[in-house]
View (cartoon, rainbow, N blue to C red):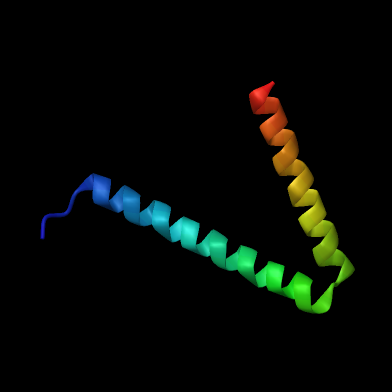
Amino acid sequence: MKDTRFGAVIANVMSVGARGLGLFLWYFLRLIYRGEPKVVAGFAGAGLAIALLIWLIVR
């Protein structure tokens, strides 16, 4: 197989995406089953940050 720079970039992007998805699912399931205040606050803060970022981009 021929190694290309594009393939390496795609592999790195997919690796970061898989890690992010794994962390999201870990904390989401923790939120559902335990309902810890720290996790609830983290999800609320992340949701607000995402909404603020979208609002700033669209504005």
